[in-house]
Length: 229
Image 1: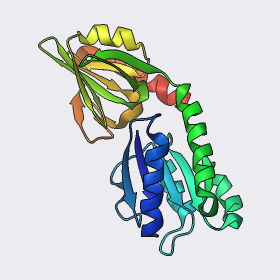
Image 2 (image 1 turned 180 degrees about the vertical axis):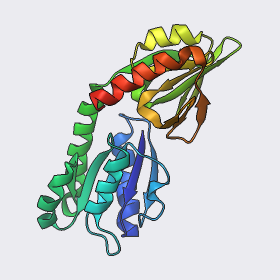
Image 3 (image 1 turned 120 degrees about the vertical axis):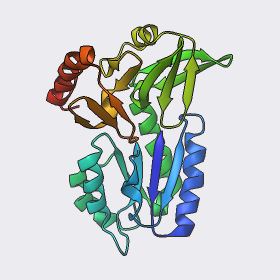
C-alpha cells in the first residue's frame, strides 16, 4: 500500500509520518512518500493521500480534485487545523478528516476505518520463503511467467512462485486479472493507457497484447469500463 503525505509544515510532516507507521504496523505493508508541495506529487499514484487542506502555495481541495480525476480509487484523508474548511472539502467526498489538534485520536479512527475497508477486499494467500504471505489482489500489477517460474509484481514487492500462470490465475479467481499474452496477466485496475495492441500500466510498464488474447481483453476491459470501476 502506497501512502503520500502532503503538508508544508516539515515538523508536522515528520511527526505524522512516524505516527502513520505506528498505526499501520500490524495492519498493512506500506511505503510512504512525503511532500511539502505538490510539484512532484503527480509523478506516481498512491492508494492513500494524507493532504493538508490549507497550504500557502496550494489549495488542498483543488489538489484532491486533480488526484481524483486521474486516480478515482484513491482515498483522500484531509488534514486541517481549520475546522471551518471541512464543509467546503466535503464535495470531494474524502475518506476522513484529521484535525491537527486531535491528531492521535483522529488517526486511530482513520486507521480503524481503513482496516474495515480493506478487510472487505480480497487477498491472495500463498506460501513464500516458508511463510504465509497475504497480498491484496487489487495491489497486484501483473504476473509474468518464465520456465515454470511465475512472478507476481506489486508496487512494493516481487514474489517468485513455482506455479504455472494458469494455476495462479485460477487460485486468485479475479475478473480483473486478464491474460494478454502467453507469458503475462495484467490487472485491469492498473491500466493507465491502451492503444491497439499494447497496454500500459500505471507503473509505466508496457506490454504487447497477443492476437489470440485480444478479443478476450477487449471484452473484459469494456465490461470493466461500463461498470465504472
